[in-house]
Image 1 (cartoon, rainbow, N blue to C red):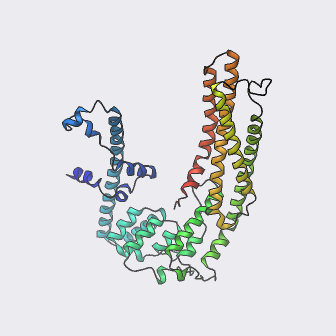
Image 2 (cartoon, rainbow, N blue to C red):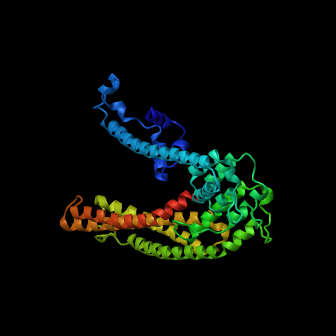
Image 3 (cartoon, rainbow, N blue to C red):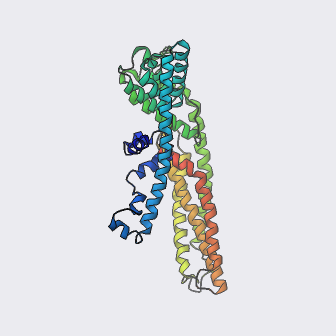
Length: 404
């Protein structure tokens, strides 16, 4: 009966189902909500579907793959559900025992869960022990302050939903007069970021998010030191902004050098054809099928590298102000790297096409030889290396998500 209940629960709301799963599994879980079931093509389905089973092998493979992934996600969600049930049971047992020592452990555990962003634990505590929201740590920070200070947006939203009264008074300001926005303005060490520029972007995004949470009258409020949240942010992130600007300029300088080299090679390729030219100035190998590939890839490499070079030069001349790291500089960086990637891929394909033309002409073969195929395959290696090297940076900038 319990297993049937769990199976029924998998048809519920996506946000509830996916909670507790890794990020990529959440994405796959979303895709599987309306996926076909493998059982539709198994023995015992209706007669019409069974008669078409052998005529749709591709559909069956797709359904089986979805069924396999669905089963894996189901098992993960089942383990997560059992863990939450065990947590609720332990909290109930601890509250039944009572005593100051037990409550002290619950207080410490709740504050740790808030700092680490364990939403299920915080929700279970607030459901069974609502007075936990009245606890403060040694710095005078409530659970609200700790959620903002440690960039735990989901926990903060949970607190605002669970608590019946709005944050005010001691819940709004800590012992030093800092409200939520002052705490959001404090610099925090970043984990798993590609560089200082991405760090400052993440800090800016969180600060902008916190501004939407705090009431307008508190955005310019001063703490006991007489500083507004914006002044605290600028003061604490001054060195990080300088490091981010230097990091951006170093990447731009190095990549601009590569783009300039590709421009030079691609421009020379417009006038120097493999095999040379005849007396009339026409390329000797122009009738080969791969000559068009040589011309097209060389032209694309020239255009892409020129665009990339101009964008990197623009980044080098940028002043790298604080607000530039929010959208302008990361957007320009990802576009420049994409154009550079296209230029590198095309110039390597141009090299492969040129080499293939020369070998084919030397061997007297009209088609693509094994050596030509090998040249194209070898070009994939540096293209893949460059792509995987900057894949994480591309993903982080393109998604632009705040990881709290």
